[in-house]
Length: 264
Image (cartoon, rainbow, N blue to C red; front, side, top):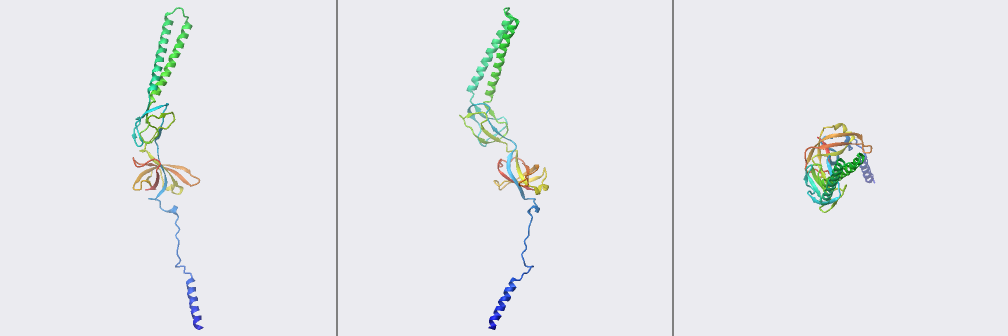
């Protein structure tokens, strides 16, 4: 009986000892405010790459496409011919307008000669005839100018230097005013519209050099510069729009890629 009591006392002692609290051995939890960490060298904002210069090429007239001299990926220069439209009907219109102008000029010349040589026409009557023929000449000149402009518009050129990013036309297709035919982007002038947390604004300045990392190109880092810091804070996210210009020419970078921005 004494042995049983002794065993019970030993067990209770072990139990009570295990339940005792030692404040020196209790684990500690460190709470770090990420906003107070050093952001230098870390990637703290991101956004999509875009370009300052791009264009969609359309036709000013309705005509059938006779030649397309570029494809996706083709590099073009400002003023380079990229599409030609069929000119047969357009040239016929120019010829007809020219013939009409020649006829109007001939009629005007005859009316002026008759008014000068004739004694049967009064001054007001002769002046009226000349005015009528002169009006016909003016109309014919306007028609010829319009026909020539249409003919000139059959040759479509690129308004910028860049690379063809989209092609929506083939030989034999009809081109219409407003219909996109070719898209061209100038990838030499790229930038990133990034959103920065407002708590780091005191660490960003216009003209500051930054590091740019693109997940699609994991083995490369690019250099850039902060060019604009928006004064408006987004109410929902408390972020601020920051424009970062990418330095130099980088053929591997494309508009639409996501980029992360880090402070140097």
